[in-house]
Length: 99
Image (cartoon, rainbow, N blue to C red; front, side, top):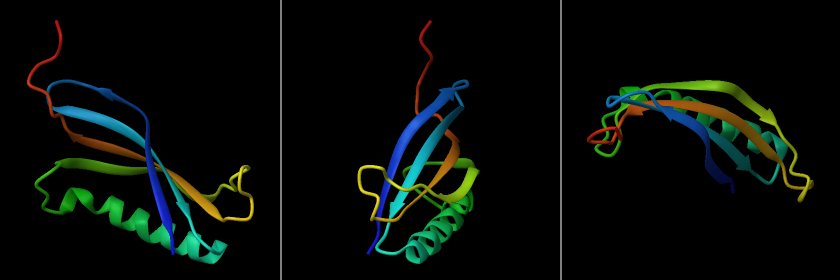
C-alpha cells in the first residue's frame, strides 16, 4: 500500500480571479519501485485536473515544479519516500480582497 501526504508550502493570491498554491507531495510505499511508480502515476493524474469536470475546484493549470524524486525520510529511512512539488493555479474562492 501507499500513503500520500499533501502539504501546502506556499502560494499567492494574484487577484479576485486566480490563486496559486505550491503543494509538496510525499508518497510513501513499501518498496522504492512501488513509490516511484505510484508517484509517476499521481503526477499524471494531477496534471490532468484542468481537463476534468469538478464541482469543488476549478483548476486553470497544474504544473510539476519538480518531477518525482527519491527523498528518504531521515526519521524513518527504511520506508521509501518519493517527493514532488506541484503548482496549482485555481479560480480564487474570495468575494473581495481586503482594502
